[in-house]
Amino acid sequence: MAPSSIAILGGGLTGLSAAFHLSRRFPAAQITLLNKDIHFGGWVHSRRAKITLKDGRETSVLLEAGPRTLRPNSKSVLELINLLDLSPFLLTVPKSSPAARNRFLHLPGTKGLLCIPSSPLSILTSGLSPKSSSLHSPLGHILLSAVAREPFRLWNRPLMIEDESVDEFLSRRFGSEFARIFGSALVHGIYAADSRELSVRAAFPSLWDAEERGRGSLVTGLLRPSRASATAEVNDLPYQLGDVDEQMRGVSVYSFSQGIGALVDALLRELRTRRNVRLVGGVSATGLRMNPRTAQFEITTSSCETLRATHTVSAVPLPSLKGLLSPKTPLPHLTANPYSSVTVVNLVFLASPGHVLHPVGFGYLVPRASSRHAENAILGCVFDSSSMSTQEAPWSADIVKMTAMLREPVASIARLVDMLSEQLGVRLPDPLVVRVHDNAHCIPLLRVGHLQRMQELSEVLQGEPWSSKLEVIGAGVGGVSVGDCVEAGRRAGRNWA
Image 1 (cartoon, rainbow, N blue to C red):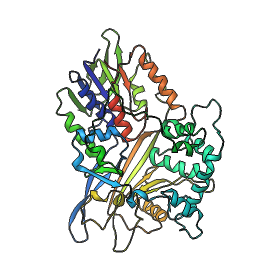
Image 2 (tube, rainbow, N blue to C red; image 1 turned 135 degrees about the horizontal axis):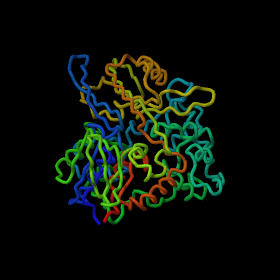
Image 3 (tube, rainbow, N blue to C red; image 1 turned 90 degrees about the horizontal axis):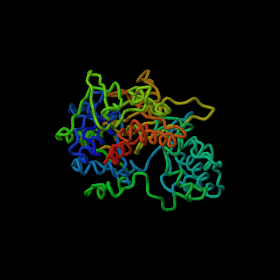
Image 4 (tube, helix red, strand yellow; image 1 turned 120 degrees about the horizontal axis):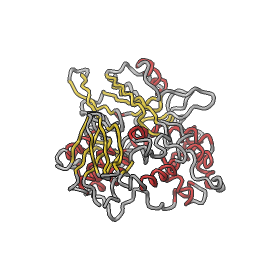
């Protein structure tokens, strides 16, 4: 039976996407979305800060506390851009741009940055040439050695293993040094977590599949055609892309003139026009139960009301969902994964003529330290004024904008600027604008065995008392990217008649 009323718990991107698509799929159903904060959009925060230039003119800079750019590989996000008429506000960075091609690492215990080779040719030239730049050669040598040897390694996945950590996987195929430097840096940039704990099948399923396609060789498997992805279009859910897909040809990353928050704002504007959708901000669920007599969900709220619905979508963090349930009807594995906290610091500088504060490129990541060095508080830094310069006024060329990501709260801005200066190899001036965002428990760390645990959760939801009327989705279930969250919301309720 089709739902007559739907409750959605959580107003982040997953919940908003669910509300958008469910309201289109079930126009006769009354949909109520509860969000504990007045602010919708979860960790997406795009704000402008006013500054005064040296010549006295006033301008503003866009500061992001959450995701700042998107890759064009998520059709569900491209579909929203089309359906919400966001194409005129798109800002794209082509793959050929230095901002897209140049990415760096800072190795703990050293000064300055190392450029990551961006092509097979650059790996060869930086790894083999004795005259190659010191900016390239150390990483090029590690990459060349690891990648060249990998196809000749025999199948070495342990028997009967169904999952392993990212570090274990990369160490098997490329060696421990490659795994520590490149694998840990990648995981720092996406999950702000330890690659020795993160599940490779949950976080990077394409790598696991490629190893199987290559009969043990990851490199060989990546060169062979892949099977359809988990988010491939299916017959009953065609993507409505318009010409947005064509706009994304040759694009590395994109955003909007007013930041990623433009996507949230557009969703909110559209949902507020729909008569069958009610958005309730500043109110959280405090309890969730299925009434066996009425076969309806009863959701108590922080406003001392009881919301009743035939179907429910939970898009809140899994530990939060556990706190809503009765001990009589528990769900498994809701607290199996810890959550990472990230402190995001926006820094705006006024650069002096001829004083280059960072190389042209997207930014840099900091891998896990070797046993000889202490871990660095900084996970990475994005060069916003290079990676997405078109978000600012054309006369703002002397503005340099960076965003640092840290694994712990900032004790001192002066100390942070000193650490960034050491990593960049350039003395940074005092920042003109500083914004600190402590994003506590914001990214789930999907531990080894996550996919099996989520399969067991799904099976329980199909049985009594839930009978597939409760859907549990979000970053703690699937992937953590914006595209993963939007796709999860898009697929919510796809099996409801």
